[in-house]
Length: 169
Image (cartoon, rainbow, N blue to C red):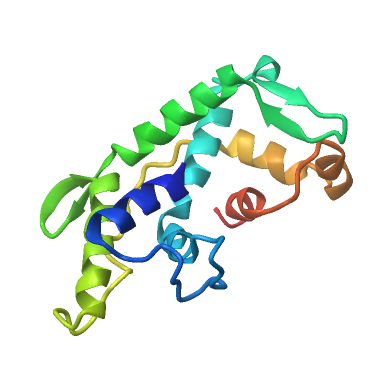
């Protein structure tokens, strides 16, 4: 979903989604979209944490495949999409105005295009700084941290970004 938002912004400003800076360039990959996801990736993490913490998702929203991976059923995909859209529509202060996150993503893409064509002398991906009220609880964080690597793996997950975010927070 975040990649689609990034692709929309990239296409809107007329950049080539296949020409990235951080990710490997390959005609079959949207390297610039992958690059652009990085400053906004926390929105996906917050979406997942919010769904877990609010207990909006349950076992009926998933299916376990023959290889023991978890996949979303349509009900789960709908909940995830709605929650992600909620986060993309949250307002942040940018350029002294309140703007929704999806519009900030578009503005940042536009700023990159202006930097690349020489209309801007520098580019800043540190702003806006996002002040987001925590949606998780100490209880849910402790539960996630307490899961052993073996248990985590048995459930079909890796201890990726979500686990690191919880440990640091």
